[in-house]
Image 1 (tube, helix red, strand yellow):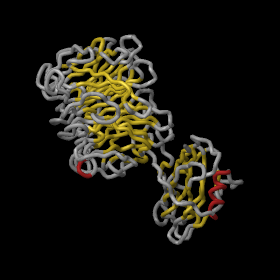
Image 2: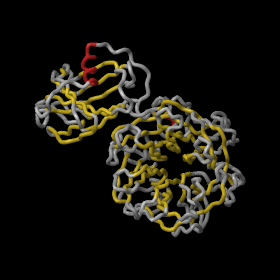
Image 3: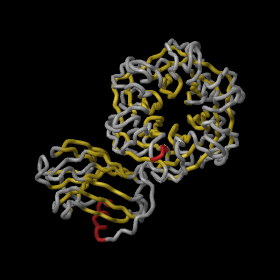
Image 4: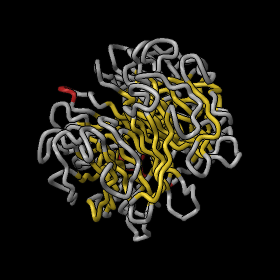
Amino acid sequence: MSRFRPRRLGYLTHVVISALLLVAPGATAQSLPGEVTAETKISSSVGGLVGPLDDVDGFSRSVALLGDLDADGRPELAVGALGDDDGGSGRGAVWILSLNDDGSVDAEAKISATAGGFTGVLDGPDQFGFACARLPDLDGDGIPELAVGAPKDDDGGSNRGAVWVLFLAADGSVKHHAKISATSGGLAGPLDDLDDFGTSLAFLGDLDADGHLELAVGAISDDDGQPDQGAVWILSLAPDGTVVAETKISATAGGFLGALDTGDEFGIGLAAPGDLDRDGVDDLVVGARRDDDGGPDRGAVWILFLTTDGTVKSHTKISDTSGGLTGALADEALFGASIAGLGDLDGDGEVDLAVGANHDTILGLGAVHVLFLDGAGGVRSEAKIGSGIGNFGGDLDPVDDFGIALAALGDLDGDGHADLAAGSLWDDDGGTDRGAVWILGLDAAKWLDLGQGLAGTVGPPALTGAGTLLAGEPVVLSVTDGLPGGAIYLIKGFVLGEVPFKGGVLVPGGPLVITPPLPLDGAGALLLPFSWPAGVPSDLQLVLQGWVVDAGGPHGFASTNGLLLVTP
């Protein structure tokens, strides 16, 4: 380590070394990055919803945050109920819920064939509400609009599908609307029978800065290439909600070079989390829930890096066998059924994702995977939320389809934790298959594995951390898989450096603090327990890495992964 000049240890590292002489108290219950810190259920019998919901309504097939429509300080959440029977069997509906800080319902409105001022013609079963997405204020009245998918609409042919653009009033009712289908709204298409256009929706912003906003629309049964491979349409919208231009992304169109197979249902989930590759153009994440990587219908997520015309510049894939996903997916998990951009949940400067796998876990209860991305479209770390998993205490039953829909809610209660709405489509509260929505508080990442380990004699050593990072609480740093009987230097920085060093990558950056060499035991391990000190600022980011003196490394060293910690 001759290129570093050891100096007086910073106060945090000094605490760690001094604490080698202390005995840490017993571990306390805690949530981990991406796990649940709080939960509220909205259903026919809990959470303040008056409704009523009826059997087989499928309340929560879609969820979308609208913002505060009426400026009362409470945000509104749109929730689709694809099986609602207002006006006829399976026509569908959308509920507009005003949420309290704890995620319960303060007030509600309903939009259907018979409610909410909506005058569009719905037939049975159109499944209006199968998808929802917030649109900005198109008509200049200061209130955002709502796009609603009806994939079983029969305009032009059987189940070709449609999207309704609803111009909302402050009370959540509909002032007027536009319809986009095979026969209306300016869509050139073509759409074919059974395309299911409108199965998913995501607002992309103005990709080409021409003043027209872009909306992504999934059509999971599109047959480009092979039957039911799926497709996504990128629609440029006029202020009246009609289409002025369009681009199609599929196995044979839009510059997409990913390999799709028959029945993949590419387009079942959509999210527009922002400009992931920092080229000035927002990107799109697309689910393909019946992708067979690793096993039948395990599912996949495609990250599409877009150009200004809505075509695909490049892509990455996250599945059971690619993209860095380490948590095994079950057969028929349907990973990718829903997607939500979470913003930067862990404070590493990269956008993170929530991905629904509505048949994952035993008995198909469903799950949500929280993916911490690495900046290149791959997974750096992950967490899972499901029945008894991820600190989630909700009672799920077989085939509840938890995770069928997802929407990021920001921070509802101001507690510093991001909140997430998750659909549980066939929940039986109050009656059969009525459905429910879970409002989940998510813990910010405290410890994030940054990778970049360098192998030595026994492979790459591993650095892990555990603890809440709250004053007086126990914290443990652990090193495993180092050179037995060797020595390790721990290096601390305040930013990511990621510069080449000794045949590997030095992950910490900025002013560096380096400990004296610390001894590894006969198994190549080191345990550093201590109590977290008081007075450490919140949102402080520290980047740690260990370098082991090891002749088996490229230049006499092996290195652990980098480890990012963020104080609460």
